[in-house]
Image (cartoon, rainbow, N blue to C red; front, side, top):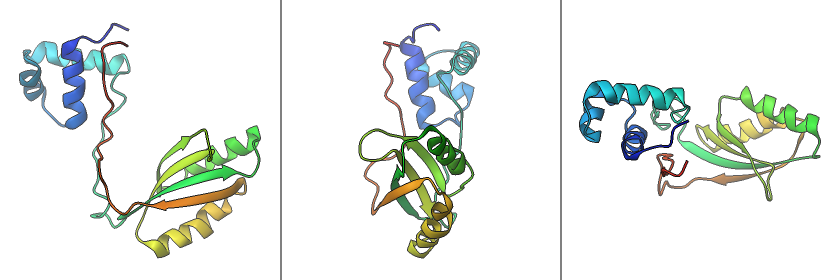
Length: 157
């Protein structure tokens, strides 16, 4: 992989803000013509700098306005239990993201549900079915201070 230059970094920053931008618009923002802009973008995709593109859906508009962060501790640190948990999480649509973490929790999850009643049902009926969970701790998001998920980019790759 080639090192990122200033134009690559500009492109990645622009695309993190709006991945729906046209090649012509992107070219204007990075001071190139469309053809080399298109080639650079394809190279960034090919080399794995751009993982994928997606639309960010407003959770309230689709009826899932309650965001919960949930820390999970497995009942035992065993390879098969970790694998069982990871496989289970993949099948649960309310869990939008899940990270294997160090510290107090083995996993942290980002969960979208309709309301508290839905979350109660989710904990009892969905997470309650995952036998390897030892404990969970829920954090209810009461307001967003910063969002967007942008990754800081530097040229020292």
